[in-house]
Image 1 (cartoon, rainbow, N blue to C red):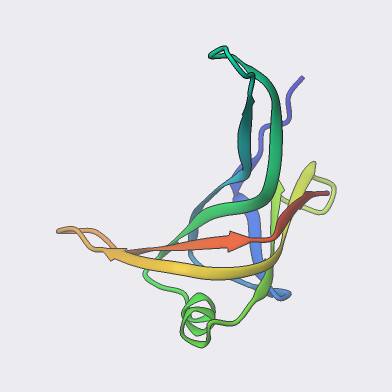
Image 2 (cartoon, helix red, strand yellow):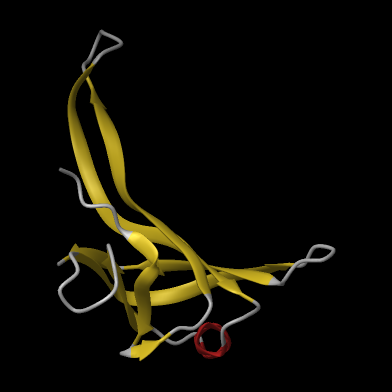
Length: 130
């Protein structure tokens, strides 16, 4: 049976400190790729792989002082998303550790009758599943 992870019981840490108001986190691993062509044909014969990086974004209700500080200082940090399927220490958990992160961009939105949400776009050297 699959483990269903619950956002309400999950946490996000920047350099070991909790981030308040996190609404969502999304990331993808990007690997450079180059096709090696065969001479005299339109088919590839091999693939050459290069740099691998992580790109992602975190959406926070209102704003995050921790992310804003890292953005202004252009300072690297480590981030851990500890995802759980329920409350308590015995709940099933999956963690993603992002190494050597930088905040690349920030955007903010506020709609009528709503609460401000800020989206922080980050890059990382690698992500480790724990």
